[in-house]
Length: 184
Image 1 (cartoon, helix red, strand yellow):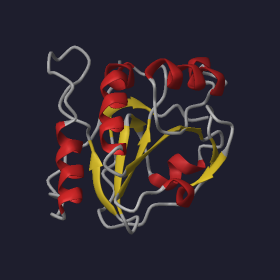
Image 2 (cartoon, rainbow, N blue to C red; image 1 turned 135 degrees about the horizontal axis):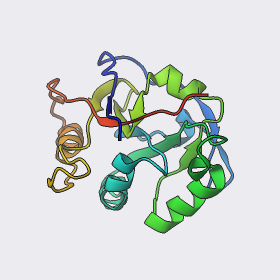
Image 3 (cartoon, rainbow, N blue to C red; image 1 turned 90 degrees about the vertical axis):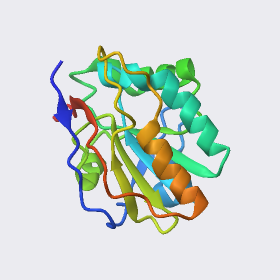
Image 4 (cartoon, rainbow, N blue to C red; image 1 turned 135 degrees about the vertical axis):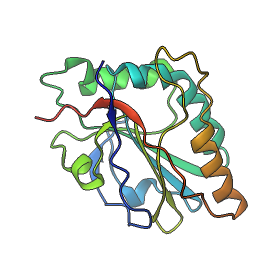
């Protein structure tokens, strides 16, 4: 399992807009349709990556907790589904239902959205404030498949709690580690 770190784009940049289909509802969404007045988490995930599989249950619980606090979550799969059929829209829908995702699971067939965000791995997390400016990018926590550390969401939890309490998010952030996005 190859480990690819996230790019760690500069903080303060604006979230790129998009228009993508949700594999569960069939609706087409833009960033403005899904953003929150508190914060918006954009996650690049997929179905087949062991790093994402390691987080799925905790990510579903974590996102539900923070959705209830007014933060929106958006998952995007940008992998080449022709070569990686586990990442097809049909399988994305099954995966979202299996884990009870309360957030849209969007398919970026052209991979243009991943390129606009400079996403490089799955999972890759980006947190934007109410003005859709980047305040956090990096890891969910220190847990990885096989390292024995519990999945807690500690790093992202700290960022989101700071936003909710009106405190600045620390700029000391660690890259996410995962499988590389499967480019066409």
